[in-house]
Length: 94
Image 1 (cartoon, rainbow, N blue to C red):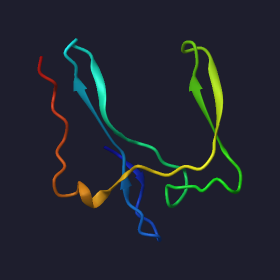
Image 2: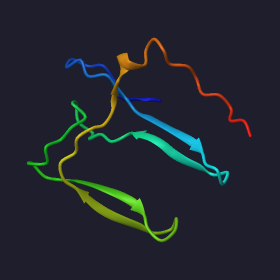
Image 3: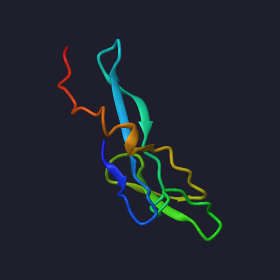
Image 4: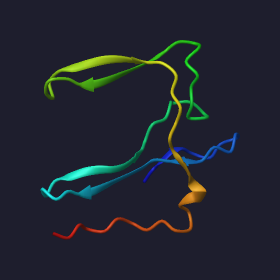
């Protein structure tokens, strides 16, 4: 878990959360993924004043694809949801 937007004059304090689980076949899959946010003060963007361009891997690590993103609504959690109960990760057991 890491801060996505530090506390500021607007009082926004959000965190990203992503958890994984061990599948029956012995691989790790994403269980919870709350990592979406716009690089704005509010972490949201309505998309009316332009677009963001993001890059992602396509057909292997040596090839990139540009994608244009419209409106972005964050799915982050608030810091207060975790401040008193957060503990560091533990090593997986097999």
